[in-house]
Image 1: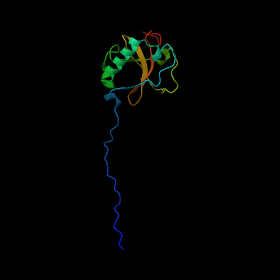
Image 2: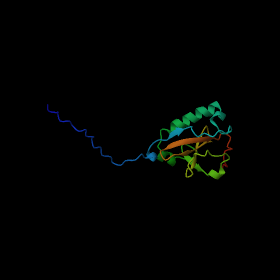
Image 3: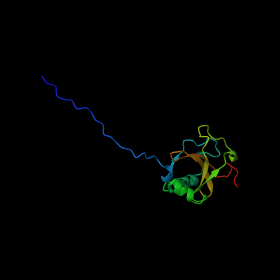
Image 4: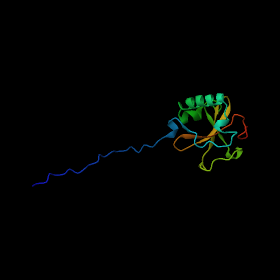
Length: 137
C-alpha cells in the first residue's frame, strides 16, 4: 500500500517594514497605577468637582498626540517639566531614573504630575490642587 505524500507545512513569509511604535504621533494613554499614597496629593484627596475636571482634561488630552501636546501652552492643554529636586514628596522607586516629571493642568491651574513612558503612557503620580507638591515659580 502506497502512502500518500504528506505536504510540509509552509508558513507564509511576512515582510515587515521595520516599523516601530511612535509615541509622539499617538495620543497618550493614562495610568493611575503609580499614584503616591501621600493623602495630600492622592486621588482620594480630590474634591468631586476636581475629579470631574480631571476626567474632562484626560478626555481633551486623549484627543491630541504627544507632539501636539508639546506645542500647546503649558497652562492650557500643554505640559511643563518639573525638576525632581523641587518635589516635596518621595517618588515611587519603580520610576525610571531618566524620566522627566511632567505637569498637566486640570481643574483650573491645578497640576497633575506624572511621567511619560517610552511607549507614550502617562503615569499619574500626584494631584496638586493646593499648590504644595513642588516649588511653583
